[in-house]
Image 1 (cartoon, rainbow, N blue to C red):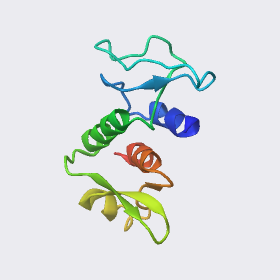
Image 2 (cartoon, rainbow, N blue to C red):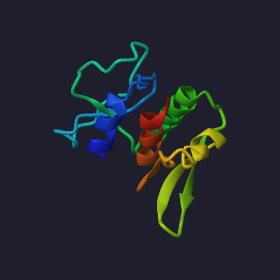
Image 3 (spheres, helix red, strand yellow):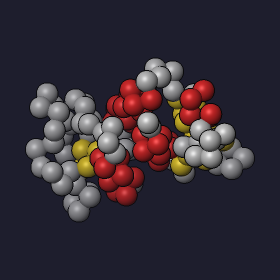
Image 4 (cartoon, helix red, strand yellow):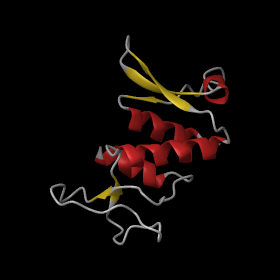
Length: 118
């Protein structure tokens, strides 16, 4: 999850949101608080905890904002066992050769969608 979290914070559309849980990838056994009103973690080495449901919800909000589509969502495909992001705009990317953002986890699919956002 560390690699996916690092990809997320590297995105041009990334920003910290109040309520996101954070973790230190070098000290995973230590509990870290959620981002508060300052909306930036106190230490720059902290990453978003993409296993936390509230943080995943914030990531989805960032994806929707980046694409300008409040109806974007994720979907799990049992056959290939992958997560994808769904919306008319994102699926039309397949026709342009960019492909639909997908990943082995919901967080990975959302980060792929954030990376692919215009």
